Amino acid sequence: MTPATAATGVQPRPVRHNPPAPASAIGYTLAKVTGSPSSDFPADLQRIDFDALYRGESPGAGIPPMSKPPWDTKAPKDNVIAWQNGGWVHGNVLDVGCGLGDNAVYLAQHGYCVTALDISPTALTTAQRRASDAGVDVTFAVADATMLHGYTDAFDTVIDSGMFHCLDDDGKRSYATAVHRATRADATLLISCFCDANPAHEDWPRPAVSEQTLRAVLDDTGWDIESLETVTVRREIDGAETEMAFWYVRARRRAAV
Ligand SMILES: C[S@@+](CC[C@H](N)C(=O)[O-])C[C@H]1O[C@@H](n2cnc3c(N)ncnc32)[C@H](O)[C@@H]1O
Image (tube, rainbow, N blue to C red; front, side):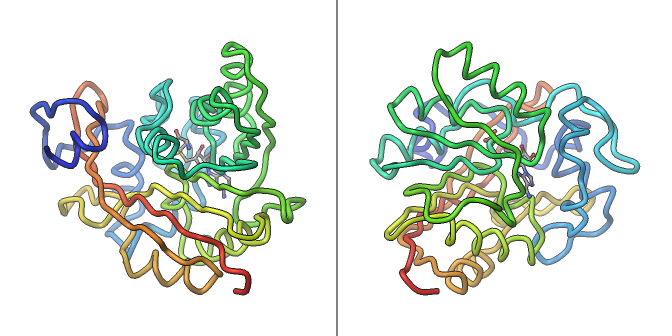
């Protein structure tokens, strides 16, 4: 069984490696716009206007608008399903960088009390509608994950499906510190982010987070990594099936930083 099969339960299909840059794949587009790849991810990504992106407008100078964000699968992500099935979700849940809300809806359907935060009010309008259509209650609010103002000692599980790699190095540290403050003793932090195992492509580097960065950021901010694995996921982007490597991280909150 390939890692992709293990992660998704679907049989592998032919995939396109190192595809040309699809206009809607934010990683490629941003890398092109911001120049050569940095150590982990173009720092300029933090200046991306996610709300403009969700409004269907250009999210930054020189970046074309997208008709639909590439992560809008209208379904919970495989990583979130795997975390739930693995028994790693417990207590009060924070979905940080929740986007269009499908992961939050899925966890609410499984009986969790879910707070879902995103920096984009436009994304949250759609997320709220999807929760309402699904008949579940989710508390949605606009918040910057690098600060999480107003949330202290509130959550037992944090899920981060695809937000960590949107932050630059300082943002990653601020975020990990903020979620430490926002969580209770023994909380679990579950992150899925782009991995630097993705094949290199000179013109179109993918967003990438190194193992070293993950370990340093989390260790320095009060999180013990209990599990760290790479998983290959196949997604259709602009009609082409594309293979992407992700880190799946499970970390436990230490009492003291
Ligand atoms: C790749 S999308 C993933 C969305 C969703 N979690 C999913 O699995 O489909 C990343 C999300 O993080 C949000 N985001 C980026 N930076 C953020 C920040 N500093 N605070 C809160 N949300 C942020 C974006 O608005 C976007 O919705």
